[in-house]
Amino acid sequence: MHTHLLGVLKSGHWPTLMGAWLHLTLSFMVWLLIGALGVPIATTFGLSATETVTALAVPLLGGALFRVMAGWSCDWFGAKRTGVAVLLCELVAVIWGWLGIQSYIDLLLVGLVLGIGGASFAVALPLAGRAYPPAHQGMALGLAASGNIGTVFIAYYAPRWEQMIGWRNVFGLMAIPVVVTSAVFLALVRDDRAVGLRSVSEGDRTVRWWHAAAALIRHRSMYWLCSIYGVTFGGFVGLCSVLPLFFHDNYGMNLLSAGTMTALCGFAGSVIRPLGGYVADRIGGLASLRMVLPLIVLTVASIGYLPSLEWCVPFMIVAVGMMGFGKGAVFQIVSHRFRSQIGLASGLVGAAGGLGGFFVPIVLGTLKDITGTYRTGFWLFAVVAAIAWLSTMRLRGIITERP
Image (cartoon, rainbow, N blue to C red):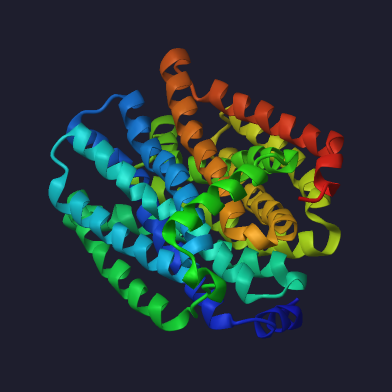
């Protein structure tokens, strides 16, 4: 495995891969910042459970919307230029959060703009995909996408920073790594723009993009990939955004302990993603999904029983870890089927994942308000994952069809 990893890195442009990883890592920290600070923010504004989960979910909705735009921008203006624009928008968002949140409406607006961090996914994956040959797509994309380990960093450190400087100043503090990452990204990443696009007018690019998007969404496989990614990535990012609140409400954890448990779960889902891509390269993405989705169903259903903390944490780690594995398998399929449109395809599939992530905290929080427990929400997620698993057994034809 170690020798194979070195071979993969040498087969392409590794500084670009590193730049893509840094971009995604920092962007995930920005994207999930409100989730990591959800408890003290809710206390400051006296939010209800529904208002709190809505504030946690809005950045995920913003990420779904911005990913489509970023996918278009990567295909027509280049992923490097798009990546720089995303980082600049993130800088504006954290400064706005630092100086401008005075009400719940302000919080929602800042959260929507923080969603630009979710667009990094449509930047990092095209950069990695174009920097490496097809034989190593699964592994290269998995390595780049493991930048979602930023979830771990923000879940662990944000509560600790909040206790030292207050949650508003945590937003301001995040401006420092955004600036540093921007400089490193510019230095490491090579320009990926296609020479032929430089002479094309902006209007023609837009028309061609809409034609390409229309052609892409005519394929059944795109709908299937979006639905599966809504379960794997959507489950991962949605749970990581709401877990601090879940551990606090259901098990009475303080903010630091809840953040540590969330970081542990996020770590499992992040570090295993390259392995998901590696295994998918070897046995195929579809076979990988058939193996991992039933494990997600079983563990999430077990969490739905709301067992003691000693059992809940291991179940949650396994569930989020398997979601991370599944993410790598999905994008192995995406990279092989839509290589010439990897930016657009990544944006569409990634948007579906972000939309799935938006619904996870909304459903969990709303059903808790209605039923008084998180049990129903977790069981509903298990049912959705079971349907996704069945689809991998029955819909083989849409994977073999070529775009």
